[in-house]
Length: 110
Length: 113
Image 1 (cartoon, rainbow over the protein chains, first blue to last red):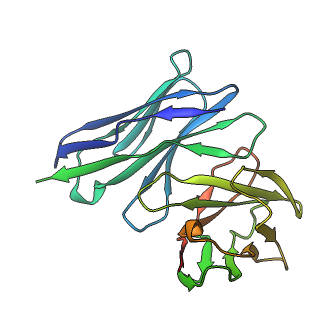
Image 2 (cartoon, rainbow over the protein chains, first blue to last red; image 1 turned 180 degrees about the vertical axis):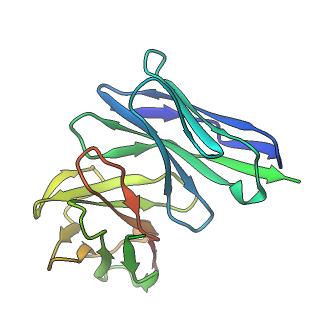
Image 3 (cartoon, rainbow over the protein chains, first blue to last red; image 1 turned 90 degrees about the vertical axis):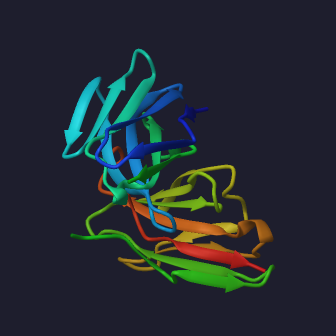
């Protein structure tokens, strides 16, 4: 089976940088994804890492280290609208099921 | 930008009743999924569907659940006899290929009384 661990809550100041970590255990790792979910909303895809290294998309970056079974999401120049839950998710190779972490609730404060 | 749509946005039903949740996946996508999220909890995989058949399902997806693609655009989730614990947000998702990004619909909030 698969399991993911991420912090349950993070608070950061508007304009700052925040990093949300995710560690995973899986028998056949294929890739690590990040989703954003605002209260009452749908998960929205943010980024995907299949290989080691950093992927950058605007203010958001995601990093993966397969040898450490670890990844993180980096949010820069935080805005109030970034307050949401952020889920890391993994998929085993050959399977369609995506397993989500418990989510990290990010609160951006002025 | 194409998006996944779901209807209804909210559904209230009595325990034991049947409900059908509807989804229209993105038109060129071939893989379809249902997930659920109980309030305050993580998103959980229910089932995936490809080529008009279930390709993978979780232990949650028992005999009370079924999925169907009745025509070329709709994808439905049926719960035959709802239980209180079925109350959750149900998300439909679709992807272009097996290993491609899954795009989620806005969800249907189901409340079983």
